[in-house]
Length: 130
Image (cartoon, rainbow, N blue to C red; front, side):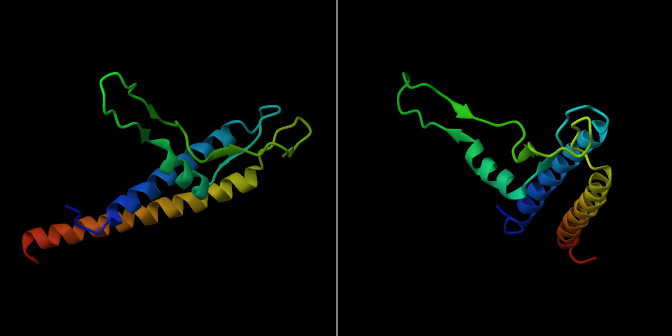
């Protein structure tokens, strides 16, 4: 039974995206001084496409069929291949990364607030409006 018409599931997917983006930004910041490190980013559209194609499973109609499923570990993450920000080949722009981190934090907190609102609504209904 889907209580919110898929809203909680969509918010959960948004949180997954924000978490992967946050980890990617943190990795870029941590490698700020690493020579030849190329900055990484997360694309929501790439993550969505890969997530739709990630969990492919075969339907076994016979015991002799091979059971398989394909999974990817970090969908949507890609590197800037031709970006060279500094002389040592490093592609991390700290100002951009800090701005992205702040933007992603606001996005994540907004999703958390929306989920809390949905759950508070459910709690109010369960208690009978009191």
